[in-house]
Each structure stands twice: as structure tokens, then as C-alpha cells.
Length: 160
Image (cartoon, rainbow, N blue to C red; front, side, top):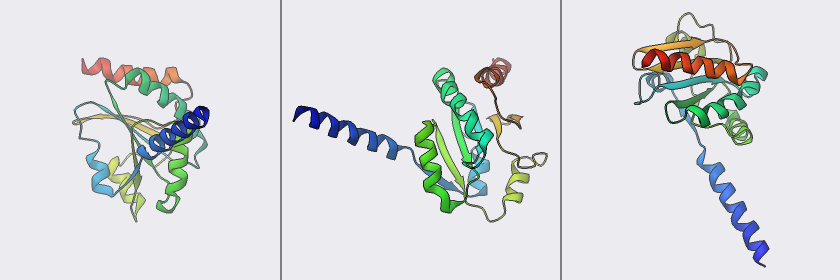
């Protein structure tokens, strides 16, 4: 009986932790605002569940959060369709993706891409480090954790 109670409590806690990760639907203005808000610098990663390089780099972001989470906030913006929100949430839980999760609710993704950065063609994955008026971009996947670590450290060293 004790064993069953422990299993039940563990399952309940797991369900609650998965529900805590929510995906917030945002419009263009709310997305652009996230580049300039927050006291700490932000890593803003654009990804999609159907993007293989995006999914391959996710473990690096999980590790980066454990190393830099006290210095940087992580925001993940999915290019999946709103109707695929359940799949996005499933990938967030499966990969244990940290941080804030946004899903774009936009009828014209091209205008959104231009508003974020007119030189960005919308390629995925793309990652920014943003703080106040400062932005650094990388328009390719981080193939190794050391690549992401170097990207973050270069920015943090500039800010000191």
C-alpha cells in the first residue's frame, strides 16, 4: 500500500510539473516586446517541432540553462501552427526545455520576420541574445554545447 501511495504521489507531481510549462500565444507586438523586457539578458530562440536542427540543439539549451540560468533568461518561440500547440507542449516536456515558451499567433509570418530583423530570412533555428537595445544573432544551429556556451560567454564578457 505504501508503495502504491508513493507511485501515486510521484505521478501527480510529474503531471503538475508538466502542466507548469505553458505555451503562451503572442501576437507580433508582444513578441517584439520580449526583445526589450526583463532585467537580465535574454536568449530568444526561434524553433519548430518539425525542424530537425532545432530539436538537435535543444539539449544544449537545457544544459546552458543549468550553467547560465542565473544570468540569462531563456525564451523559446515556436514557428509551429497554433493548432499544433499540443505537439509543441509535448516536445517541451520531452526535451525538458527551460524558460518561457511562446507560440506566434500571426496571420503574416513574413511581416513578423521583417519586424524582428529585416536581414533575417526566417531560417530556423535562429537565436538572439537581447538586452535593452543590444542584440546579437546566430542564424544556424548550435551543433555542440561548447558553441552555445561560447556564444553566451562572448556576450556576457562584452556586457561586463
